Image (cartoon, rainbow, N blue to C red; front, side, top):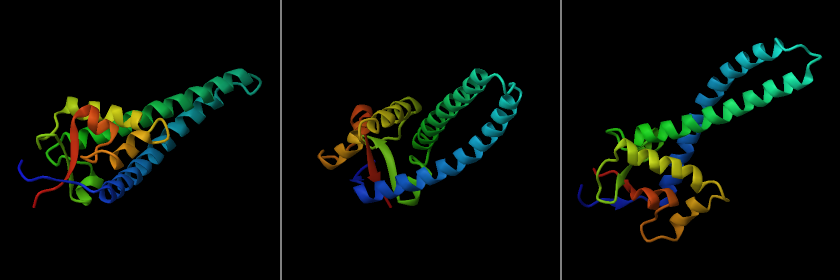
Length: 154
C-alpha cells in the first residue's frame, strides 16, 4: 500500500473504547453463563465444607480471568489479521493495522502484537503512552510487532 497516513491518537482511543464496549457485552454474557455453571457446581459442595466452597470460587475466578484474556487476544488477533485489517472499532473509525510496509498482518504477527498489548497495559499503561513520544505514534505492542495503525485509504 502506498501513501498511508498514521492514525491520530484520538481516533485510536475511540476505536479502542468501541472494542472495549463490544468485549464487555460479550464477556458479561459469557460470564453469566459461566457463573450459572459455577453456582451449580458450588451448590453441590456441602455448606459445612467452607474450604471446598472457597476453592470452587477461586477456581471460577481464575477461569474467568483466563477466558477474558483469551477472548481479548483472540478478538484483536482475528480482526487485525483479517481482510478488514482492524477490529470493529478500528473499522468504525476508518483505521487499519498493517506492518511497517503497509501490508496486512498475518495471524502470527497479529498474535504477537496482541499478546504484547497485554504487556503494554501492565504498568500504568506505559506501553500505550509511548505513542505520544514516538515519531510513528507507536505503542509498545506496535514497536515489538513492527506494526502501525493507519487511516484507511479512500
